Figure 1 (tube, one colour):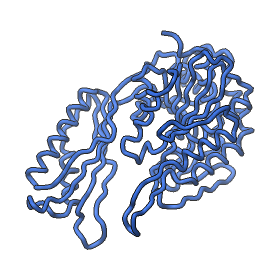
Figure 2: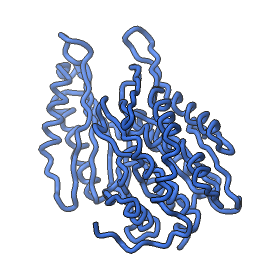
Figure 3: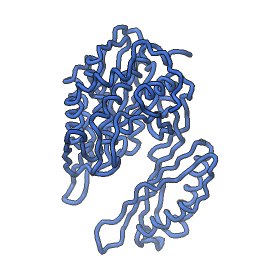
Figure 4: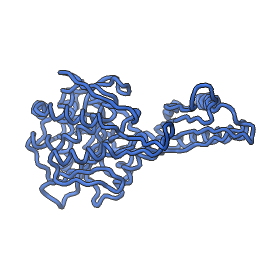
Amino acid sequence: MNEPKPNTMKGADPKAYAERLASLRDLIIGNVVFLGEIPASAVTFQSDDQAGSVDYSLRAKFFGERLLELGVDECSSDDQGNPVGIVKGRDPSLPPILVATELDSLFDPAREYHYSLDEEWIRGPGILDNVAGAAAALCLPEVFRALDIRLDSDLLIAGFAGTMRKKHGIAAVDYFLANLDRKPRGALVLKGGEFGRLNYYTEAVVRADIVCAGRPDSGGGGNMIVAATGIIDSLLAIRLPQKPRTEIVIGRVEGGYKYGEPAAAALVGIEVRSTSNTEINRVLERITSLVERMRYEQGVDVRIEITAQLGAASLGFEHPLTRSAITMLYALGREPRIYPSVSELIYFLERSIPAVTIGVANGEDKHQEKAKVKVDSFYPGLAQTAALIQAIDEGVCDAG
């Protein structure tokens, strides 16, 4: 590895931290299992087969209660129900440091899930995205006690629910930042996997649902899965540039009620990504035109619902926080995996809050029910997290 010249870190020794944090093994396992077995959301039903409302508060309530159990000085929720714990620093006049994590999961909220473990691994759906990241955030009060670190700034530990399943859910992070009393001096976004991940810049991204419904009055009352297939074919035919790199990801297709009946409605979930804000707007215009044309030519009630639209931004490779994160990964024996984020990092960068996204653990089969995380991979992941928080506290984000 071509290790860079280390930045100066006054008190942080990530490698020594990782060795000391092995003492928190039971706490880490407990947080992962407790959090992972609580549904990220719960569905109430209006009838035996018709879903009603969705409750995203179960994990959020546990997260806040667990933070209090583990020794934060204060814990409350914002007006959207997202929990925030505070570990008070020595100097209340300083801006706070913020650690943010997602409490959501992609897996069916109506099912009951159980985690299992052995000497090396914890297994369970959603564990890498994002139970492990949220569990690591819960560990932070005890991490700082174990490392005998006392910060000057207050440390805010925030969990956000419904970011994956709830439409516009990721915008809760932007709303939270807009309503903070004091702008953070720096921030970390914790993800479960993988340790070594480093996002300091974002791609422009549009997430949208293309919804199809029949229009019998226009002769378009056929099978909407067939209509959705036509939309997918048209999306795949759109010419995309290699520079700036742009792609359309078809990530979700839903439709139909039961066997033997044509689907009255269907949905195609897409994500458009680009390193260029201009290019992503051009592709979105093309998709919107495609949807409009299909409505008139095929008599289908089709519409596009944008659930998130985020821009491209960068903290900068030379920013001291980025360089500190790279240095710490090398100190822990890990080559950085640097790539753009398509998540909440944009909200921090747009508000000129220095921030990076990092992964805290290593595992396998990320988006499958058999996903698993290696227990001892949390030790360097938490060590990097603690050392970066300490670097922010020592002023690495304060210049300029």
